[in-house]
Image 1 (cartoon, rainbow, N blue to C red):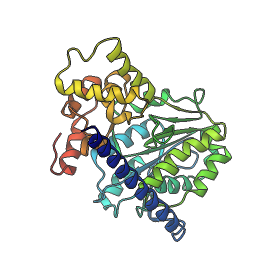
Image 2: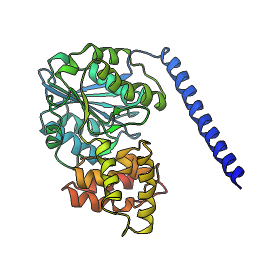
Image 3: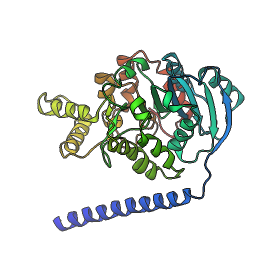
Length: 346
């Protein structure tokens, strides 16, 4: 029996390695193909009603919806950015944008670009940054996208945690998967970073690669690595280690599992063993409720509710957690889920 268990483990390990190797090879082929692509994929451009010239704070916000819809949760996000003084360059990777959507966006944005969805979010970030007249004149550049619901708390409070005295580059959250890096759905660059050669070189060299594996490993991870190599300080406002340490403390010192129901207990045990072994997890998935309820984290990942790839239990509590922790209108999320979910409920 022991031999069979060992053999099964080795087979699983070999299969896992083969899958990883396959996707790495696909990523390298996609990178090679990027040399055959053009220098820009912007197809349409509309000036907004807010000025971009002379702005000291600019947000490049990436949008994607296959129907070109600007959902209510996205408008909420854009309103908060505009109210906080950001001139918004919205870059949509949608196949088309209806006139009604463009009219909505122009009210809140300084510039609206629609491009082919080539290079995913990083390709869109690159083209949004290129549209800024004078990057060196900025005090702050924010890169954000619509892969999250929120902000659950006003964005001004989040940005207060991301002052240039604390770091040159901030992320809302970090990840230790592959290697330490700031997650790219919300990145803040202050003047030192924007004036650096490393920042300019990173975006100049970035290619439009059609591989999420490449984007994550070379661009999301690579961006933090490039900034740190240049001597720039990179920090997360809501660090993974803080949430992971809270779990360990709850298990070891407060005996949180003693009164837990069987489902929650099994999940906590599994996560505790993983954290204790030093294996990194995606905090925005595994610690989503702690981040929101205890750390005032301002976002809820769309992928978590729409797909739940890690099969996190008890997600049905998401609405209660959000309502108890903030005044965010959860109807914004529910309306989007009603339109986007198939064969799944939350």
